Image (cartoon, rainbow, N blue to C red):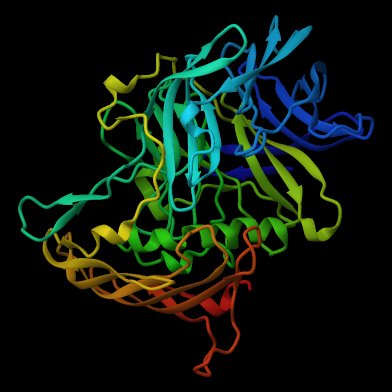
Length: 530
């Protein structure tokens, strides 16, 4: 399949061939430009957790066996990941490192070496996922990972050290937010929201001196960069809908992002069409339900896509919502994106994984790649030694994650830079209601906000149950819009997708109803998929 973009030129989309009989497979580019594939086969022994691992060229040729055997899953881990070291000799799996000799391209011997996490993680209360994502820096030494509790995610950075019988993690530090706000020194009774460092870690960039992840903008979620040597957070995307992480090309000029932006009935843009500054405390209570709707739901049964989308990094940063990027999803809507995304070292080829929906029979897999035929790279960004805790201004000494009780710091009042205020508060109950209320608020003096948004949700963002979003919000000035919206999402179980309810409520009205309009664009909730 050949597509054309007026700025990037011709882009070829194609499958990467895998061995006959392979199923349930995943693939990623290695640092040498070959493709690492893990798969199951009909000929495998009937042992649980049996994996086959090979490397091939991205035309399917040059198969080299790396490993065949059992990789025991460790409780508290999010399965198996395949993160290649830049030395092209090792793969970080999460709880193991697979060492290959002499390297991944010419492997004649491999060995599975366990990774020992800090002892404090053993049976620690409140942790339900010791790691949900893991990444290895290009210096082959530093590792970052995300640990989940029922209400928060904590990101760690450490040195991965080879011992005689295992790898261990040394000099562990926390690199995600531990505080949400601080007192406003210039305005008594008011607070200043601090930059939010969080979301799952996805990639080291800037030669190992920054991380890519999901962060918060003024809409729902955005793709961001978190530098390690400064306090800034750099926003990469600006969309009204749900957005995930951008994986940068080696030259860091291009990116592929997991994004439902081209899936108009499932991208949840109605909730973020009007920017909602200083309301992340409220909006954070519905992020997981939106993921379960527009990602998990689409993967399971719902019509739509979750990308991926090819973007020019600088254009995405500068042009914001005016820049869409290139839709790389299946035009027929049959195949759905799965991670990981990875890049060939020449920065002209990217690959990802796709699967058919679970409701359409036995799941089929394919490895998909795009080739930028008219793009010329000036070479990869050089690698550096990743900073340690002493060089990271916001890093904190190791501690176990604790559920953040946001209620204790509420209400929080944020004074507008030009006028008015935003009041973040909570109505405490078995299912608390979080509210962000705008009172004649303006930061820029050009657009003035009045009204509120609210979210009523289970006390744990991962728990099943009912989540209710309500908004009566108006913006006037250079930008004009209003949101008169009510949305009810139901989840019947922990692993169940979210369903948008259009049933009749006790008041005789449809449970989900209303619209958002902003600068001439109007979205109605009735147009969304159930």
